[in-house]
Length: 385
Image: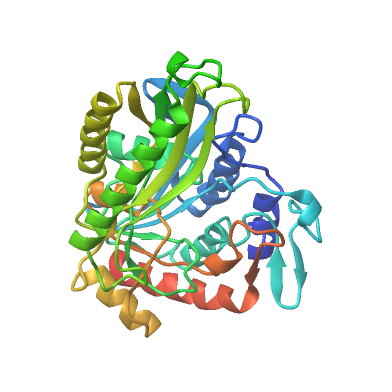
């Protein structure tokens, strides 16, 4: 059976729902997507391995990574992407999010740019080398759950595979090489108070008032971090902390018995998420003693380390030469740190714009497709031949 055209491949990938989410109401598997990719890659000579994702010793239902390898050797190039999408609001789409359609030189569909569109581009580039003996392997890697827990990339890092020398993650960067991004951690702080009748404050302990003290301390911590850490390579050159949501109490005439607040912290390269959590816990322990009530932190998901690839690395320099564009930084997090943990020089670079990601009427501009294929062909020639 002949390989479908690039458009037809993306059409089929978009038509296969693979939403990942922290919400159980939205979350679904990606296995059908990786099985489809394997079905296309095997006739091209790729050896495919579908690996169920295991998290904390438990195999996740219908979640899997794909490692497809052409050729062999100790070096080589990984072309990596995630197969999941974010949730969607169908009422805000002007077309069916699961039916790829073309209009105004754009392909519209959920995941068209972030980032199912990268796989047909990578396959189209790989086709040119199917009958060419490779000196080093070409690996197409497809992961699960990047948009939620990054459990797919984490599982691969724990397994120690794939092994190669270079990795390009095809997130939508308008084909601009990216060598740095901030990390991210998402945390929840809980203050346990004591409810009671509001007419007598002595009957309870107001958790909301204690949370006010906690928030003030966190903002002090933010100021300390921003005074200590700066990187002019980022549009926002300091670490950021966003207080995202807060919930507490249940009625105006009851002393608030519990209050929870969730926040994110985006660290610069050189900062460590585990160390940041430890410092926050030290502050909360002090506050808990001061306030006379339990105050504790929980991690909402494992977080992503900050990422930085040296400007003088071979991969960065080759990508800059091929695109004619200096490497830059981005604010969003990717799977790049996990590829680095596997020992690979890593950049983020792919077709499409992040400005169209996570939005209704998501699209990839068709003018980006052929330049992306040509660029990836050049990378394969550089690192695999």
